[in-house]
Length: 317
Image 1 (cartoon, one colour):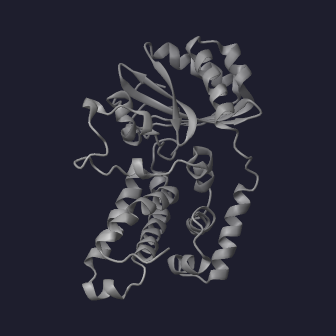
Image 2 (cartoon, rainbow, N blue to C red):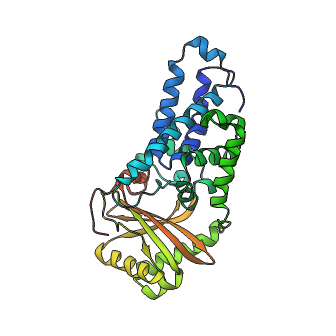
Image 3 (cartoon, helix red, strand yellow):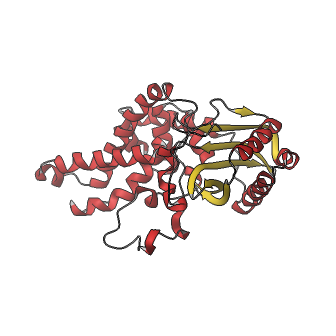
């Protein structure tokens, strides 16, 4: 990373730092907190120390990554207390959204929303983030920094407190975890499948849903104890289809919208203008293999513009 010439210019690093932190943590809120902490540490440095640092951007990246590493280390214990399954926070693509009141989101008074600074690519797809969750904290940091952001192992070594060779081994170990991952289907191909799922779901057509689901499909829901959600994954295409129709029966007036979720075609369910669920899909050979449904309202805050509200209800599904 090139040299940043002044303290003011370090503000320009925020977008990159948010992107790194979200991929490391899977949480927009935690990513923003980590970046804010890194900036607080930078501004706490004496001016003379700041001037000694040749690349403030690299310094901020190292500090942000260390903060994320510490958070990842404590996350496992926190998630053991989490109600039900924990899923990464889903990201909207708000480029086509109309802001409430027609406000210009780029205007001088508009807040710098971290969600709008995250680049939506294959490295934030829900399927990819779920694989990252299976890695050790050190593996995840080494893999994300090197394979996603192309940082050299010498810089990663400063983050992890290990030798460059050891960091290279960590990245290789992480890479093996994703080596079986398929190349993602095209957005058009996935959009077609998701659209058919939407139509079959709206029609409560169990047979059509079964045809669209891989027999070994798995659906995981995240309610976080704040919204009704099945606590364990639902396994098998037939069982998932029956469950989806049962949801439709229990939630009259549920509206399904085709939306980009983490850069990939997905579905948003809202009722009376309130976002209830954001669903991501993994597609293979024209059939759904995985469904990730996020219902925890704290994780749906970035979607408030979409539905003009968030769910605080605890419907039993």
